Image 1: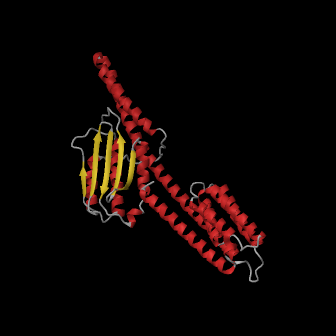
Image 2: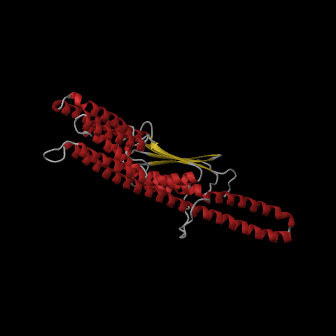
Image 3: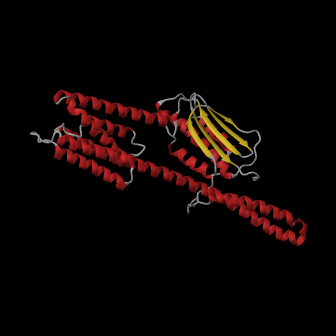
Length: 380
């Protein structure tokens, strides 16, 4: 979880706490002026406990909602037996709405439905236990009904949005896997073809000069080893039936990408190793696509950046690529959490055994850093 997500969650919790405290205070004053302060002690205690459950609901949503509904039921019985103001009061109804809405949004369908039904039972119990009112249902009962209905509607709406977002992210990951499978399929096909050619050549050499057969066998062994490495990366990935063209972009084409970006965004500086060994095709294409996605995010979310730096480095065990900008913090960037483009990039990088990190820098700007392992002994 990034620092922005933590700050957002803290702000939401603090805001909810402020609203619940305000509701508790308003209800306490209203009951004190009409009934007397001591008549609100039982209902106030129940509202405080359920409000606390609403603030810590993320730890155990189901049990927090069950406990809140049980406390509301006890408050209804106590209000009826001891002739207290109608319960649940507004503060307790608001806290219950948070618990029920949160459960409807997150929990599996059956528990969510049961807790929503439990909220409806509480509303019905409040209506049955309330004293007759000349103008219809008491205001507290109406507040409970509105709060319950709003909680269910909002919870279902957010549940639908979460489902759509998860489905979209899953589709992005699947598309990225299919694209990577196409690339790795081409790599394996390339090596298998080379092995067949060398095997055919070995037959010819064996008839003419048997002493040179060893060299051909060594080449076949090297090609077979690399084909097995690439095949291991393919395992678990789905293969699309409609083959698209393989992605051949690599570090040598980063200059073209950056030149195109410079025409519509802040200036970009590219740092590349002076001498580099050959990388597997899937690493070449992944480096290119990470830079492209990161520059696209800069154009969308940080148009006021003064400069961008793209750094590609290599070491004996792998390749790293980092894209950083110096844009000052702003609302657009603070709310940016990586988008579906980075979801796909993370899926691709992790499938290749690497890691990807994206987030704000300590001083200013944003950083996207990916590390990709390269098998030792790779040769083109």
